[in-house]
Length: 121
Ligand SMILES: [Cu+2]
Image 1 (cartoon, helix red, strand yellow):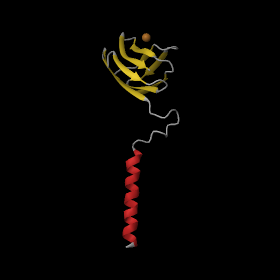
Image 2 (cartoon, rainbow, N blue to C red; image 1 turned 180 degrees about the vertical axis):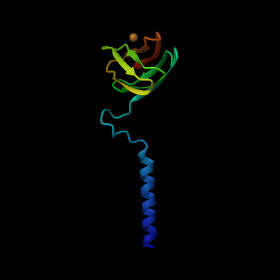
Image 3 (spheres, helix red, strand yellow; image 1 turned 135 degrees about the vertical axis):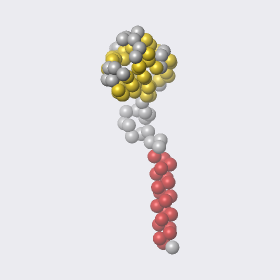
Image 4 (cartoon, rainbow, N blue to C red; image 1 turned 180 degrees about the horizontal axis):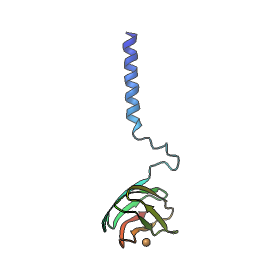
């Protein structure tokens, strides 16, 4: 009898852990939420996305997960401007956060294309 109770308690405990483990967003330290991750894929002279607008909350960190067949750089028209280098393969680059509302273009100068427009508000 005691033993059954112990097993039950353990099971309930495990379930509770699983149930609240997935949205633990306080562990990061900086800010209370996770960065906005934007996936970018370069292939030859095309890039995806291509000019799409992405909403970013003020002060939220932004990162790019870049898949590319050759190294290159992203250029963010913020003030100050940011240049983020990536390698061939998959690279995660950090753009940091934006503390002024506005629209910031993220470009590939090599391809002469706008990848995304960050709409910070
Ligand atoms: Cu530029």
